[in-house]
Image (cartoon, rainbow over all chains, first blue to last red; front, side):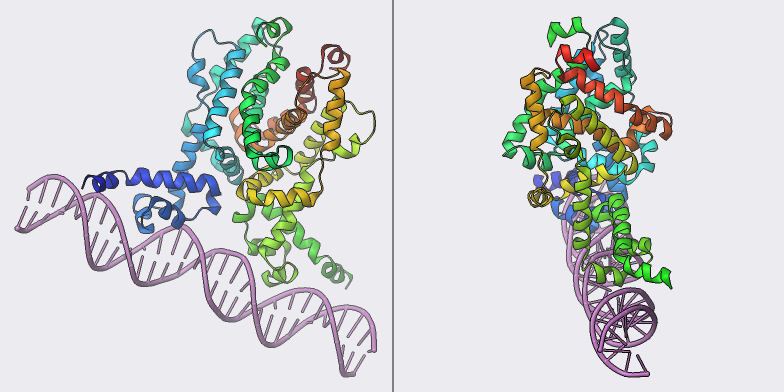
Length: 213
Length: 213
DNA sequence: TTTAAATTTGACCAAACGGTTAAAGTAAAA
DNA sequence: TTTTACTTTAACCGTTTGGTCAAATTTAAA
């Protein structure tokens, strides 16, 4: 029975998929081990056989979610001659791509980092994320005169905030200002350009604005 | 015993204060009725005497939080000759004022609107919030030529997002990019100006930029 | 085929949960 | 002082929760 053999082998993956689904949607407090077991199509005891406790399982899911949330800017940006413009475009597009597929990811991450801020120190270290390169690109662009003087960290916060917030507040804003979910999806899609331009207009120096914006 | 008489009269307020504290910090799922009772210095049964169920109590707290979250822009903005510039300045400053006092409010609201999006329709209606006037001001400023053409809703989303996001992600960002909580507080404080300028640079037309920005 | 390890299950447990109840305490009107 | 309505409490209840355990089943090596 090949089917069963495969199932056995991938039970762990099956569980992780189910756990991700439930945890991301309901958060740590709202998630139930029974629901995760059901979602994975297995027994609750088996869940504890693979992952000893709810905390253990959750930590794994959250760490993964957190890493996913930090976009793959670094990869694209590792080239030597990247400009701020590219940085902005890549970041915004990556976020739209990611969050269209996982709309509840931001609320999950934001919720959990506020629920237990103490865990952040360890989490940041464990992921090995370092935004050094991104900061360097911004600094260089300021020196080049492409960009106006500004704290690189602030630009970073603004880019991420502008990209992520419309997803965080989707359940509210879609009902408040748009007449359908599809309409809101179109809005999010259109931000690939409009948001890119919004940020560029604010941070690029005059001569650099006219070229691409 | 005047003290006791006063206490009796304000038990309801005492409970609401306690409930606000616990719910905002832990969310609906994480909050415990016992903890709210302890926080209020009363018995758990008394809690159910004043508010029949957890849901009833929560709904009251959340509705209040949601209203608080929608800033008092409207009041300032009701004057006839308000410009976008004023709108931006007032909005940013109001958010900094509010969220400095209640840092966990945004994560609470965002968490709950994502937990139960179905409730949003009713919630929006019940609050009687209408952003019509704000939208009108933006539209007028575009016609005047003070501001570049842009979907007013998008500007609104950007202003709120930029104002709120640094508070939502504070537990993470303060540890990731700043060396102390105080440093991050200074950053948030400084955004009263830097964020105002960031937005103005992006949306105001050239001639209007030079005047105030 | 036997054996030993890994996998899966149903039944079970103690603790925590939201909520109830009956009775005691308290204030002010009659 | 008695009555009446409101307030507060300790003890209790049924359910759900995360977690355990011994037994059954499956897998693969000997």
